[in-house]
Image (cartoon, rainbow, N blue to C red):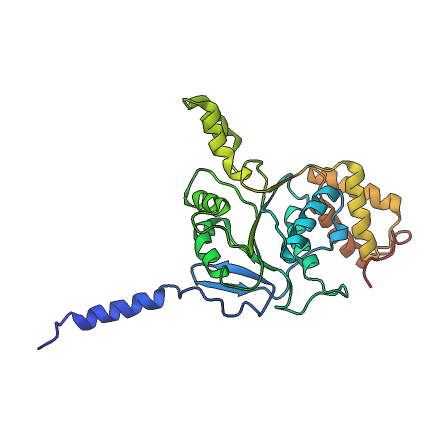
Length: 304
C-alpha cells in the first residue's frame, strides 16, 4: 500500500513543532542551588548561584516587619506551620530585600555560615508576574520534591481579574488538590489590595451590591495569612539607614557631614527610603574613593 504523498511533509511539521514546544518540567538539578528562576516557556528552573541580598541587620526602620517575616520563614524552613506572605506599601522600604534576607538567614548552618549550594533548608524560586498562570504547573512539579520552597513574586499587581489573578487566587485557596505542604507563596506590591484604587471605587459605584463587589475585589489579598505594611520613613530612620551602610563600608566621613549630604541627596530624589539611602551610599563610596577623605570613619564595619 502506497503512502500518501503528504505524509513526509506532515512528519516534518510535527518534528518542527516538537522542537519548538517546551520540554516537560523536570525536577532534575534541584540540588544544584538554593535559588531558581522559573522559566515556564522552557519548562525549567534556572539555578541562581548567588542571590543578591543585604544583611538582615542592615534593614533599619522595619524591625516589626523583619521579625514577622523572619519568624514565619524560619518556622517553614524547620517544617512547622507557616503562612503565605504579602508585603505591601511604600517603594524602596526593603520589601523584596527582606524576603531575600530571610531566605539567606534560613540557610545559615548551626555555625552561622551559609550552607553549601543545594544543601540549604529553604529554596527560593522567583516567578514573574506574567507567568502566574503557570503556577499550578510549578506547584505540581514542586509537590514531589523533598525540599521546601518559597515561591516569590516581586512587584505584584493586577489591572483586572485576568487569568493570572484567577490562577493565584486558586493557588492561595488551595484548590481541589490543596497547596503543597512544602511550598509557600511570598509577594511584594506597592498596592494594598493588589488592584488600582479607581477600579475598586468604580466597582463600588456601579455594582448592585457595592459591599459584595468590593469584597470580591480585595479578596485575593485576604488570602495571605501575613499581610505586612511598609510605610515611608521619617528623617531619623533614614539617617539611621545611612549610618549603618556607611559603617559597613568604613567610609571616612564625619557624622555631621554624612547627615548633611544624605539629607541633600534625599531632597534631590524627592523622598526618603532604604533604596534612596543605599543609592546615596553607592555614590558617596565612589566619590570618597577618588577624593581626599573627609573627617573620621562613621563607625566600624559589621563585616570582617
